[in-house]
Picture 1 (cartoon, rainbow, N blue to C red):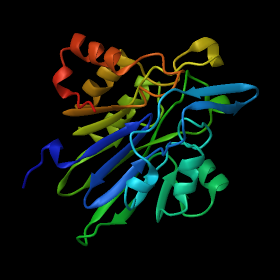
Picture 2 (picture 1 turned 90 degrees about the vertical axis):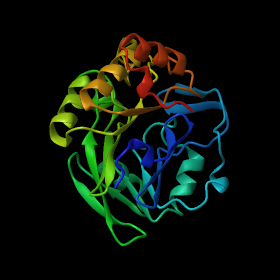
Picture 3 (picture 1 turned 30 degrees about the vertical axis):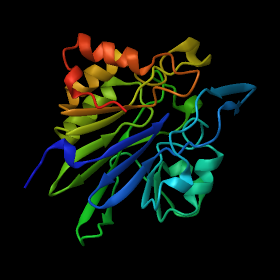
Length: 253
């Protein structure tokens, strides 16, 4: 049977929001559909959205699962995204987010897994992976974040990074999971006044390193447009992958 990464359709909708088809299931990452504008972050801080989503929630059709890396920042879960969660049968996220959101959310610790029933009667395993949303020791400030790995016996492995700035975390995932066929990497080199402007997500150069460490045959970049605190664009990411000699792995759009 085919085992190419093209089996897994991934549609990037803007910011960290992507729609993934896997084993007959439709999985949505970090839903953000609010209009451009300023969004309070707390403590007098504001994040500015600069572009609309490529789709409205009403146009997506049914969503079976939301993979929510974290709920505490409006560029990963906004008001429209929160409203959408009420209609989704399964929402997988951090333990702390599940406590705040309730409803159909299920909190997963890193390396905890859940099996989902496929329409064809098989199963998909979703395993939570660690993520570090900033420099070492950032967790008390930036909060708990997870990524995800999707596996099934007859499908290529997919990794969704969530907001992660640590290549050491990527190495841990590669050691535990093995080769990844498709990596949906949250990039954009996010920076704010926190930690003197240190990276809160990977930049293009780190994304290229992450792709190499994971052995990813296809990389779908997300979280690199639509917000002012993303200090790199897709063009910067393409330049980094070109410099690393792996631009052919990128799937843009």
